[in-house]
Image (cartoon, rainbow, N blue to C red; front, side, top):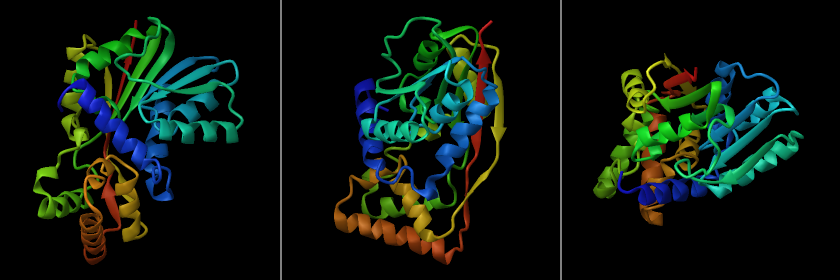
Length: 272
């Protein structure tokens, strides 16, 4: 993973670039799993929520709708381009109880026990020291509050993901799986161990198997450009990028791939 600064720069660069495709209709999985994470928390009206690695608001927006005008949601992300998308969505929905700001989850500078729920969806794996990140987020949870961390499960976007990495390896082997931190923690046991390493023993974990449908081969390419794969794509020159794109579209078409695996692990801890 490298240093904290290197990891931070990689994530910010990848997702600032991915913002141009992040909210494409093909990428509805962001909203689907963000909302699912929030719904599992059974938030109360008037609650205060912190959403770190909030992206374009997939979990922060539904949280703001649930907690209502007397509640408050703070969304934090490294990618300012995604935050602009989130602010626009909040404005379109007339939500005045949510704020989005650029920030690093390891250096939030927020008071202890200041939120009724802290949420991190598809973000904890970007931090080299994940247990330190979980401890910091836990510090911000008030008595009786909840910490929710959602990660990708095994076989992320297979079989298309393997096709993507194989196409990259064929032309730029040094980039093969050079940026896929989501594979660091994709099993319930690993998630439980992470919480334990952060000093949290009581945690409810749910592994949920699922798929994400592809309406066309182009859907997969929109997913590549609007997700963490963008961190690899943008290291290719124009010709290399076109070769990878063609290889991916050919694979999806010839193999008649109509869906990819979208398995998720949800974890929720309650502070006594």
